[in-house]
Image (spheres, rainbow, N blue to C red):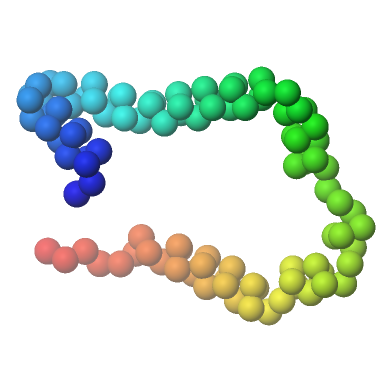
Length: 98
């Protein structure tokens, strides 16, 4: 068990079952709060608008090259997507041990 899980288990055991709901509310909301604060901080830095524009704007001359089209249409990639879909759709149908 990782240290974070151990600390959460200890918090639940110290306060009892009544506080486990509060702990789960905190642990589910805390990552979003951290991500939100990091996003606000990074967007307030100088040059953030230029970085976002470069990240979002596609480079058409690179995308129209033959090499990138070969990568996107490779049979290996199509097979991986197909097997991924099969695996994800059948993973819920497996029998559970009793």
